[in-house]
Image (cartoon, rainbow, N blue to C red; front, side, top):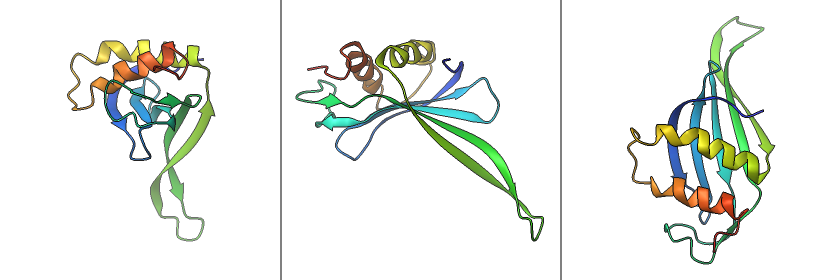
Length: 127
C-alpha cells in the first residue's frame, strides 16, 4: 500500500556519487518518507544522468515518537527509521503522487524529480 502524500519536503542528490531522493510527509501524523534511488554507477549529479544506473528503490519511513526513561521518567523525542525495498512500479506511483506538490516547491534540485521519473520508467537505467 502506497502512503498518501500531504506535503513535499525535499529533493536531494547524495554525496555518495549521485543517489537521488524525494522526501514527503504523509497524511498519517508524525510520519515522513524518503523515496531513495541508490546509485549503482554514476555520477548522477547532472540532470542528463550520463552513464549512470540505479539499484532497486528503497522507501525509508521515519516515524516520530517519544522515549520515556524508565529511570528518570524524562521524555524525549525519538524517530524510528524503517527501510523497505520496493519495486519500480511502486516507485513510479509514489512519484506521481508527489507531482501535484512540485508547483509550489522551491529547490535548486527540482531537476531531481524528472531524473527520478526517467530512472523509474527505465527501471534504473535511464541512459
